[in-house]
Image 1 (cartoon, rainbow, N blue to C red):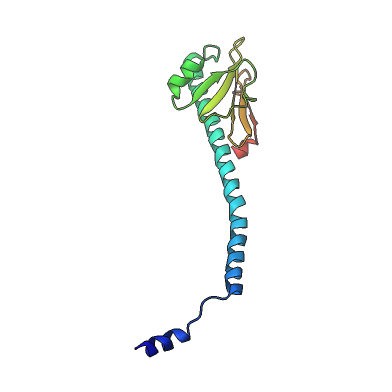
Image 2: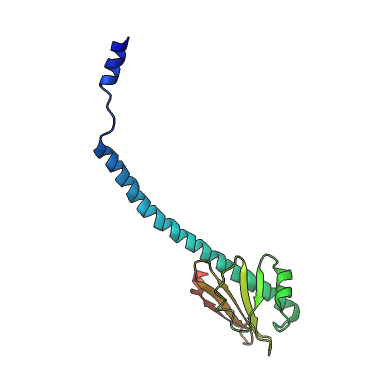
Length: 155
């Protein structure tokens, strides 16, 4: 009985050291390719979240404008009532350069209270990029929109 077992196992050998090293090298190469790709996708997702926050805040601002035909009366409370998922912070300076604190679902905004025809909204991505929009409604053509953090097509 032991003789049959010995004959069966005699022909079987394990992996050589070279074969194991080749497998480890292949795995290391695949990891070296995959990790930077994953990190790039993560920052793209964070940038997309910041852009989405700016777009949603823009829609809230435009909804408030439709009610009063002026941005002068728009404050954080009005915007939060329209879009409760975002945290709105009124900024005395241009909202396109928000504070360095990147909070989830946080946007800064400023309104031209003198004539109530323009506003700016900005958001800071967790990847460190700033995205914002400035809108001027005083023109006869319906207004002008300026995008910061990429072109309009990137949005």
